[in-house]
Every structure is written in C-alpha cells, then in structure tokens.
Length: 257
Image (cartoon, rainbow, N blue to C red; front, side, top):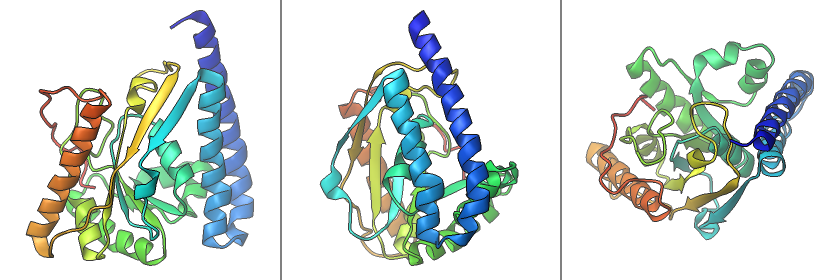
C-alpha cells in the first residue's frame, strides 16, 4: 500500500471513529423519543451511509449495484455473502428499517451498544447454538411482522474472497415459517476492504441482488431446498464477478444463524 493510501486509510478510520462516537452519543439522548422507523433512519441509516461515503471519498472504495429491480415491495429475509465490514454498512444504509443478527455482547458496549439496543436487533448467544436458533426464529418472525427487513449472513462469519462458507438454515427457516422469500445478495467487498488488517484498496465493489426466492412447500425439506437454492445462486454470482475460485469447496458454517 502506497504512503498516500496509508495516510488516506488512517484519515478514514479517524473520521469513522469520530463520527461513530458522536453519532452514538447523540443517538442515546435523541433516539428514545423517536418512533422505530424514524429512529432507525436517524441512528443507523444516516451513519451507515456516511460510512460508505467516507470509504468512497477518502480511500476510493466506490460501488455498483445490479439487480435493484429484484427487490420486493415487502420486507423479507436477506441472505448476504459476508466478506468484509463494508457490506454491513452498505446493507444497513440501503434497506430500512433493517434488523440484523448480532452477538449479544455487542449490546453491552457503552454508547455504541446502547444505541444498537434501541434498534431491535436479533441478539443471539453464540455460546449456545440451540438457543441462538430459537432466538432467531422468535425475534426474526417478530421483526418481519413489524415491517423490518431481516439481514442474515448465513456463512456466520466473514469468509475471504475466493472462498465461501456453507449456508446455515436459520435464515431460510425464518423465511419459510413467515411465508416470505429470501433475497440473495453477492458482492466482492472483501477484495477492497479485507477481513484482516486495516488495508483499503481503491476500486469498485460489485453488488448483485438476486431474484427473491420462495420455498416450494413447507417443513424441513422445503427449508433445506430453499437454502440450497440460495447458496447455489450466491456461489454462481460470486464466480461471475471473479470472487470465488472455481474449485473452492464450501467451508463449515461458523454460526447458528
């Protein structure tokens, strides 16, 4: 990474951290008085859009979206590829209101966690996979009923470019039980904003939104088939944008969600 890009990356993190502290502190005092949708826009959407804007203007990470016509009118379950932190900012800024599956421990972080707790996340206990699945099913169904998108990273953790993790069935199960589709999303953000280290590479993130997929029936078999179909679509889309090796084998899922 060049000296100029190193300085830009340092500036980016400085601005991101400063804006995060300011916004989360302000949100703790303002958000409780806002209805949920307005609260989401104030606390999450505006700041996440700010983060993607900073990534664009400071370190040169732009993005291009294909498949906008596939987004359904009614919120559903989003099954997104997980490579980076960038897609979390992007998805939370683009879809609103959105409820995300997060680690329960994050809600205890001063200011940041307190602000997050007001946004109706699906906080799971990673140490107890069975309980986590029940939490996802119960709270996810509730959030969908409240008109929120539910974001699930079915791989459970960030997987580097060139690889893909097996999809756990929690998101597909949630969609089937709510009689809603899943919306698959592929991207290559990890090539510009890697999981490891603080390096940022200028370029354009390719985001591809797939067609909404409905289950063919109900029950465990329908859930498994829908999950496999979503995995196959994301895998092919990742290959199409050059972010999945042709011979790559799926890694074991890291999380129950």
